[in-house]
Length: 163
Image (cartoon, rainbow, N blue to C red; front, side, top):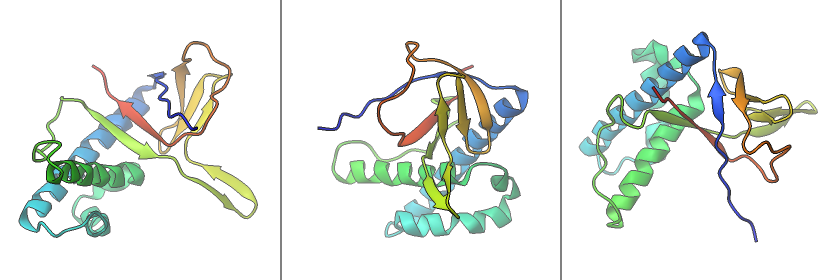
């Protein structure tokens, strides 16, 4: 039986990485709010239709190109999960995201091979205490209970901003 586990690491980003984290959080919030307003106007809009509209947002908001595209798609998935919970009567109607309340973004793990070379967008090196994230590159971390390795696979990474 597979057991899902969450590991929490404390990151120590440099100044440029902190700026990019804040930009990514803001862009994910912007995409979430734009798609929420579009979903209010057209309730038959699916998550795939909303994801197809993200490239159109790049033309209007050019700063969206600076951040991780997976985080923008995850914002749409989070919105769709909120609507699914609402329709199942497990939660309230999704609200607009505000700055300063649970500021975070999520990015999915992608593993692929290209020309015989393995590509992973999230890598975890616990011996050197480094995590590699999309667009952020290598970020120093403090280990979780000083373990040597993680037995399992990475599904996604959530990056929180704590003041």
